[in-house]
Image 1 (tube, rainbow, N blue to C red):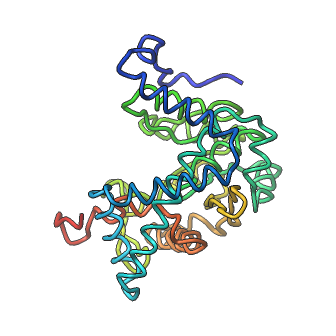
Image 2 (cartoon, rainbow, N blue to C red; image 1 turned 90 degrees about the horizontal axis):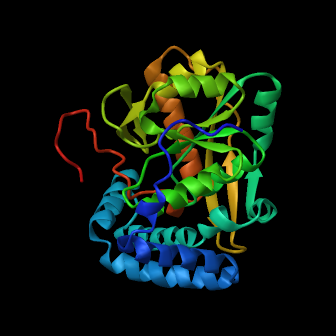
Length: 310
């Protein structure tokens, strides 16, 4: 498969500069953790998560603001418990990232399990494009990367400042049949991917500002929601499948849940379509609310002007 002509991997000189040696030590730790028992990784992740919770000031403020907005009927004690568990699960998934970078395809298949992959295969068999919209869960990358073992896929990619971290991310997303799709690439490569039979991953649950967005409720809070998925689905003759990947602390595996395709989408009503997308996001979040990325500024753009929430 031809690799993309977009941004290239960092050069060897960049990667091996002395300033990045501590980062390589962390990569080595991720490689080592792949071969250790999952119980050890999870215990380490929970311990480091408890420590991070005590020092993660700004992100914790965003997290608690989102919980207050989305779950106003819950107590502060409930929010505190959710927040603590969220940070611990997030660290557990980060410590497990070497799985995607260094483990064999067979081992990844055993750890990452797909529920609803038949919806993907049915769309491909019918000659339709597949616009998969995973939400920002702690284990987001596990579904995105693992689906590329058996399917041609274009995945979202935002270059990272640290070239070693950038190398690690790119390695995970390009090891198999996945290709990175930079955010600034525009819609043409997305449409080409849809029309050529590739699965296109599109992350649309962030607040990216008012451009190409309408306000639709998410947990009864107005949220700037992109109208791009509707346009892509129409132009690319694509099924829209929302999905989430959840970490299973019981067995150390990852479960990727793919919802059935949205019927009659797009409808021609951008606000109605946005409301349907957000309703699906809510459905997926509620599978395990502790695993959604509440540290995102989900409601940064406000319908009543520039007053800040965060």
